[in-house]
Length: 115
Length: 115
Image (tube, rainbow over all chains, first blue to last red; front, side, top):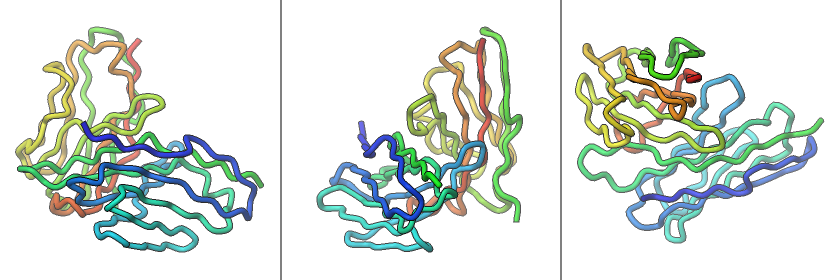
């Protein structure tokens, strides 16, 4: 059973603060890590797909890093805005065996940005 | 372009009834996935289609759950003899070719409530 852990479970920050949260995953048989943002009543939105150790990805004020050897990824938000309030999910794919393509999700970090 | 759509957005049913949930993937995407999110948890994989065939159904919880994709596009998730524990948000996703590093694009989900 693959275990993907996210911390913290929830987070409240003030507008303008920078913040980060963690995704831990099994370091063996790593293939890819996905980050999603999920706002209430909307579809989960894909942020990043990361495959290489040391990968860094950036999209506007949001960035992510990946360490496959120790099994963690960090998501950073610079200068948080109220519209960043959402649940941030990471999802792991292990080395493919047969036709396996399933994402194994963490339980998410719920971010609230206070104006 | 149009994203993944799911119908209905909400479904309330009584214990023991049969329900069907529909997913329209992004046009041209060959891979389609169903996930289920229970309260307080991340989405959990149910089944993955490549074209018309179920390539991986290892996440279906029991034989009351069944899914089809007869023409390789629209998919229907069918739940027989619903139980209160089936209450969850059912998410559908599609990706271009079903490769591990492909982004999976999600629909807004169907919230199923079994009374």
